[in-house]
Image 1: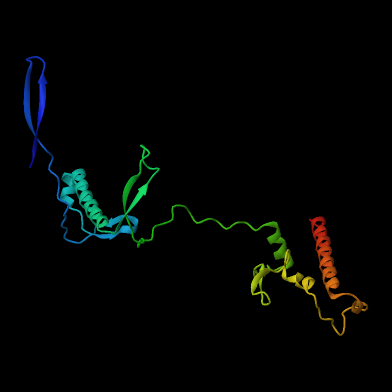
Image 2 (image 1 turned 135 degrees about the horizontal axis):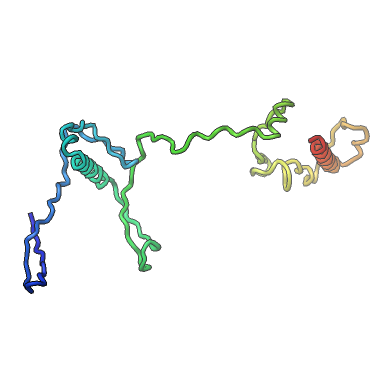
Length: 217
């Protein structure tokens, strides 16, 4: 046990008094327990299965609980110090503007399932469109993506829009003419022109349907 000297100044007699003060005794870092403590280092948690002493709880409760807590914290710190460490340099963490070096313990994945902090969110009420779709029996379209693989170029291209797959006929220098056109008179029209006309017709049809939907609300 080490000791230190404290100096007291007595103003009445102008004399100096030296008293010997004992340093507080530090407990060892090694802790022995009848039943080993288990740890969940991912959550920085220690689980002590040892039963508490009822006599100590009755006579000296606070000091006894502090002692038990101290021992388990010491065991937890010992486990953390045994983990793999890594050193990082933080430029912005220092108040002097100089680089500060930090040693960090690499924690494993947690093993204990913790309860939720907040209750499970309630299901959102259906939107007006969802209510309308359910009433009319409209099913949601499958989300198969907006891209399609073009075997000719070996690349993924958009299905519609700019450089879309539906416009590939426009860039062909040679097109095949059907033996039996769908409509009378189409055999005299360039298939590329027909393809563009069909797209424009479909756009107008969608715009008209959109206006009808707005008026029906």
